[in-house]
Amino acid sequence: MPLAKVIIAAAWADGDLSTDEINELKTMLNRLPQSVTRKDVPYTAAESATLDIYMAAPVSIEERARLVSELQNTLQHDGDRQLALHAIEQVLSADRVMTPEERSALDEIQAALNSVDLSIFARIGRLFRSQAQSVSGPNRERYLEDFLNNRIYFQVRQRLGLAADADLGVSDEAARTLSLAGGLLAYIANVDKKITPAELQNLIETLKIGWSLSDTAAALVAEAAISEITRDIDLFQLTRAYGERSSAEDRIRLLDALFAVAAVDGEISSAEQAELSRIASQIYLTSEDVAAARMRRQSVAGAGAG
View 1: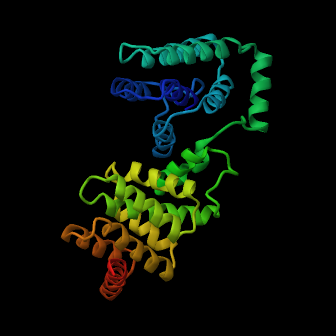
View 2 (view 1 turned 90 degrees about the horizontal axis):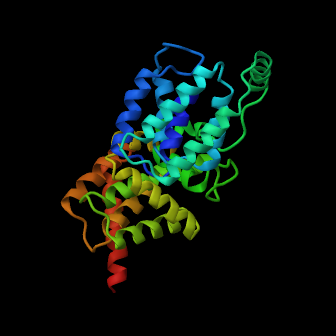
View 3 (view 1 turned 60 degrees about the vertical axis):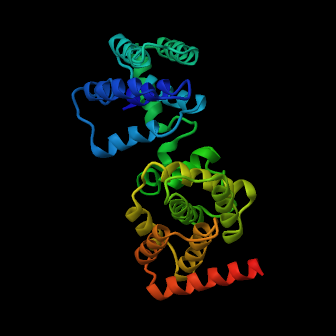
């Protein structure tokens, strides 16, 4: 696992994972052991998810340094070191172009691994230290459950930075529910498979006013939500998660916000009407709730026209 994570981190050094790098990475991950100390042990589903979380977004220099430190602690022999360096270089060369950023990352990793003392006493010391304390630094694995079940909140965390004390000005639990709401708002905005600048601004304003967010926080949630929605997110999973976390009052507030986003261009299309009804039913609202929300939206539109 540590070697696989470092390979992914190195491939992100230039801020991009090319298709060739991804394909080579997946091929190599099927061949590589989980770590240089555990041979021929297949990855479990949970371990595969742990690798996926590093493929989902760029790895910072600080986070890469933490992963390299973890890999250093697993080295037993010089063969392990050479295997690691060869594997990293092979993936970085998969697209036949090694960028300056990738070369720099490879050089840093090589220097770090070459600095490891592989004597028996040094290895024992590293073993005891690794058991006594974890390596410090940014760690997205703290948000693995969110990555699996609330991808929008995971993307929010990525944009905030992985520091535990960075937030949106609300509690973590509220931020998770808010992220799900943002995803549903973005879903409605994207019913026609495009989100215009006016729709984006309306989405930000809706989040800002409806959930009492700052301009920055609202824009951040909107950006994270759109980034996930445009990847064909599972609507059923999104509505189920929101329905389980929200109160009846929250759901009505969201429904009003959904109508506001759908009506940004002056009218609500039949496709948007159908999706509004589908979302409402999946978050435990009734057709009467939908009709009432539609009436409230029409009243707002009428007042604005007057």
